[in-house]
Length: 101
Image 1 (cartoon, rainbow, N blue to C red):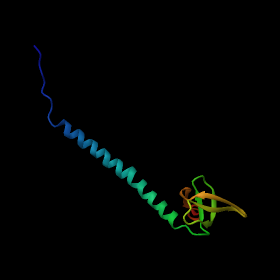
Image 2 (cartoon, rainbow, N blue to C red; image 1 turned 135 degrees about the vertical axis):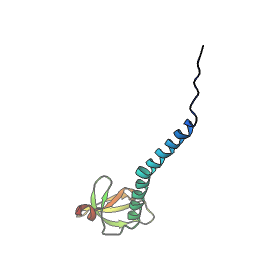
Image 3 (cartoon, helix red, strand yellow; image 1 turned 45 degrees about the horizontal axis):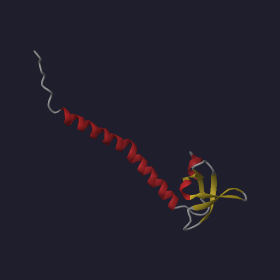
Image 4 (cartoon, helix red, strand yellow; image 1 turned 90 degrees about the vertical axis):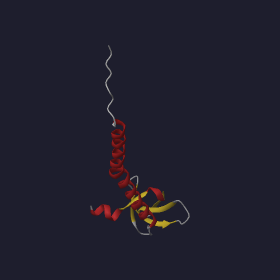
């Protein structure tokens, strides 16, 4: 004689609810702060001016020497008479604010 047990009802709904809850937590703790930080960096890049102290993604400190409108790079002076061209997307922080920390 084989005894069959009844399956509990509503088990699928609680699993879907748990997955949705995990996605909401993931969004508020990871995705949302990252998007906010990316918007701040983009705003900083768009407001660059000649003479601003900046830090590149590789950790090079320098001052903006020239902004080439329409070009994807800017020229940064890293020492007296030493300038480098850096892709605008690799400038991510204001050096004067970083030094104060």
